[in-house]
Image (cartoon, rainbow, N blue to C red; front, side, top):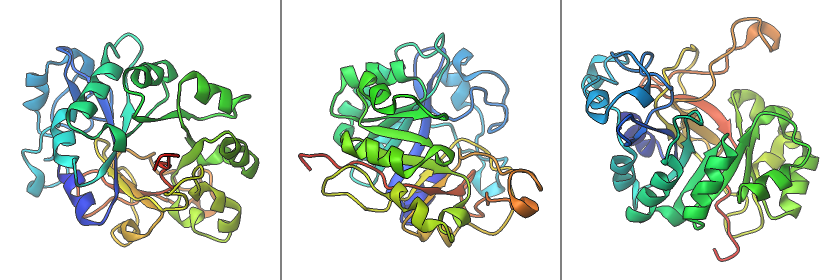
Length: 291
């Protein structure tokens, strides 16, 4: 919870997080399928009970100030977030382990009174469709890391209102197609400098959602659960920019010489909250016709 609280302090208006099911059916907030990298324990989340998971220390690796941090449940986070900040929840889990996760997430969001202000995303489009069938008022986004032959059709099949993809596959034509179909567009991009740099005009369309009262509003957010592995300048000042998205489970930095001229490392671990790194983020498309 420390990273989420710090995100709110930094002025974020969105928290991005990942959820999975424990062996005994509880919904917990953690990115990896195992606890090895972000706690002092070992094993798969899906094979652990909530009691065993909560006994692990999820903060000591980051610093002495965070000793005793526990893996939170979604119910705990949703209760805290209500009236404070919106949630962007990614459904995680292999098909054989996802169980009733979509329905549980929908029920938790409804019970905590945050359903209409929440965006749920997933690479598992079937799981997302199940969530939408349970709670249509929750906004949904299909995640993909490819060029889809029919992105609008894929969104319709999952009952999603938003396309969420790697910035690598964003084009003006794709955004025009999505907006023409009434769909929002958001992306993940691991290079804040590039997203705000000389090619900004070409990438400007990333910050627009479908027509609505929130169109064109920048989004900021923070996520939790993935230990940063990069190095570089502090993200504290970037976190305050309108189209910066601070999250702990963002993609790892590329190694020197990999992918970019000079081997620029784009990720920067936060000195203030465990697991936080900065990435650029598109406008969060919560805009709806009914406001």
